[in-house]
Length: 143
Image (cartoon, rainbow, N blue to C red; front, side, top):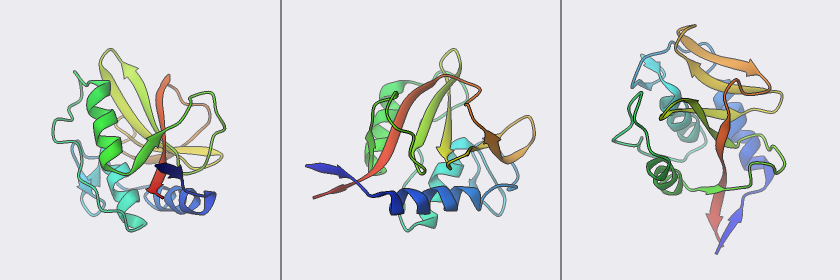
């Protein structure tokens, strides 16, 4: 059985994501020292709270599939929650940035943290998301 972790864990993930703001953008970047893309932000923020995860191996700019992201989220210890539910800091969002183009963001309370390719760095973007949110995941634990 899976339970959602209390807000403290989500707050820690949101804080870890906020700590990445300003890191340079790099496509397929996985190291904050050299640059991150949107998946890299999620992987680095999760690592920042002690959760070591691998990025999805088949992630590319276009041609993404929801089921691949769902599988990756489950491997990261994330549980899908209703899109119209309560926004919780630390939620990991998957947005549809274009046709078959997905983008990962982390809910950090008043802002959404993500790697912005145009600005060439990780940013804290004011709400709402500029793209439709198609998945919302929260940290989970086995009980």
